[in-house]
Amino acid sequence: MEHVAQASHPSAIEGRSIDYVPKHERSAKLRHQGPFWFVGNFHFLTVSIGFVGPAMGLSAGWTTLAGALGIMFGTVFMAFHGSQGPEMGLPQMIQSRAQFGYRGVVLALVAALFVFFGINVVNVALIVEGVHNILGYDSKPVGLVAIAIGALLAIYGHDAMHRAFKWSLYATLPVYVIVTVLAMMHAGGGEAGRPMPNLGFNWVAFLTQFAVSASYNIGYAPYVSDYTRYLPADTRRKPLIAAVFVGASLSGAWMIALGASLAQSLSATNVLSAIYGLGNAAAPGFGALLVTVAVVGFVPIIALNTYSATLTVLTGADCLKPLTPGRRARVTTIVAISVLLAVCILLLKGGGLNLLNLFLTTLLYFLVPWTAVNLVDYFFVRKGHYVIPHFFRPDGIYGAWQATGIAAYLIGFAAMIPFFSIFDPSTGKAVFVGFIAQRLHEIDIAWLVGLIVSGGVYYRLSRKLDLDAERALVRAHESV
Image (cartoon, rainbow, N blue to C red; front, side, top):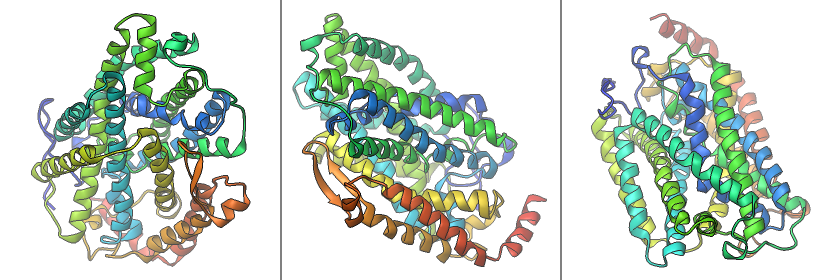
């Protein structure tokens, strides 16, 4: 496989895509990871997660607790995935060829692509819906501009996005501090919204809020190595895991708490509309300024999803026909994904919150078996040692189809189905509830079942793998 040199000039377009990053090109800094993943959750999409609990009758306090616990639970998985980047020098999803095979990894790629693209649809839909509620006219052009800027950032690549995330933090931190203070003061009263009555505690809402929050950060699991693979190979595992965990957990818990407060005190159903109302109640025109900064600061998140979706598509294409990774393939794919995203936004109808909750619940179900298989393999079976060149060979040691990983994924997913509990928060009615979930008063524990079953099945089946032969190849590769 040909390796294209990573451009070193700050304004240059990234030259790499799904290929291995040589150690001499890894100049990223560990200290940047915490702020990067803090910004990953520091936006109005995460605030929307805090609307789920109140929509089901859960008070702001209980929603905050359930959300914080869920975010921390989900972040554990994304943080451990993050440690794989510097140790392997590869994007996240191509690493799954070890568990699923050179072509079998398509199963995991479809789930991951659903995450990347679907989240971006939700992202832009919330922008369009919020701006429409504020201005009262067709705001889809705003969404299209956000898509275009996100595509440009993704084209410039890894380093450009790290810089964009830094400036996003500088811009949005004052906004959300101000909004949090205004929400705590209940500024605006009737102008910004009226309190939501009769909120309290119920287990179904609490565990649903927990599951949605956990799925939100488990949803980052397929991303993380994409943005840690440029760290030096000798980066220590524990500090990196801690940096990702603290960054993503802190901002996630804060934003969910803010969302719960906005929902309970103002009956908010759209974050941008709530920010606009609070700001204008504090000072005329202030709401428009807050919303503008929040939207502009959110654009790097669109780039994040587009970038990782591109790496996933290229990995899938390489499964069908080996390709030479590099700038041209990556840029072409980014443009195609962005055009498709724009078409979806132009055709999309329906409320952003409804789409958000249903999507994230489904997202958890598809990602849980994959993350269980991937982490069990990395930390307990192969213990972080792989024959990197064989990730790019259909006739390599990992084979074209790896029955062990595929079986564990499918068995785990099948085991989850009776525990599914999916609700539409706008109506409070069930979309689908499995027969065991019905006996559990519709409490959602499918994610826990999937983690245990997929991880356990994979660990058991992995005993049949010829790890001795693989370790010999690993030693030969690592000695070079």
